[in-house]
Length: 203
Image 1 (cartoon, rainbow, N blue to C red):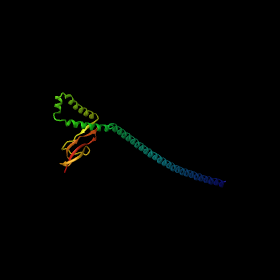
Image 2: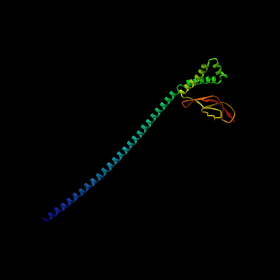
Image 3: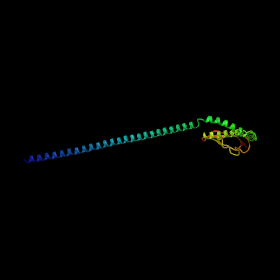
Image 4: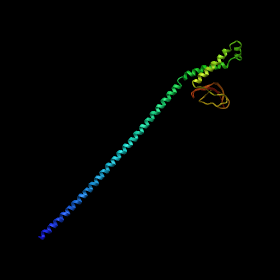
């Protein structure tokens, strides 16, 4: 009977040890599974972060390209408006140049009137006719001013400005200094449309 009890006790001890081993194996398996799952989750998280970063960079690149394209469009539109405004402002430049030729010839005529011309006209009762000539000159000047045309100042003693003066003759004198003005120059709304014809000194 005693032997039977001893066998039962021994059997229980074996069972207990077996259960303990199984419990440890289960815990180890769970730990291993948890570790593997954690590594898997970390790997997935890393991939997601990389994808998010890639999308973020792509989005920033797209925004940069969109902003650059918008800036290019605005610049092109501004240039187009400036060219349109410039074309409108100087569309009649050719006509103005022809008017200037007529005006200069007319002005030369007035400057070279015979001495005493006005007195003779007055004595002959043609005073109003003489005044009419002067009035036409003033109307020419008024028209040119309305079109934004201004005379380029040039006088003897000034230094020549290649953008505003054209040297058509040279003579003895200080290098680059204007000696004589043959015909005036003109600018229209800040742009030179006709250079002044001058004589300059040469060393």
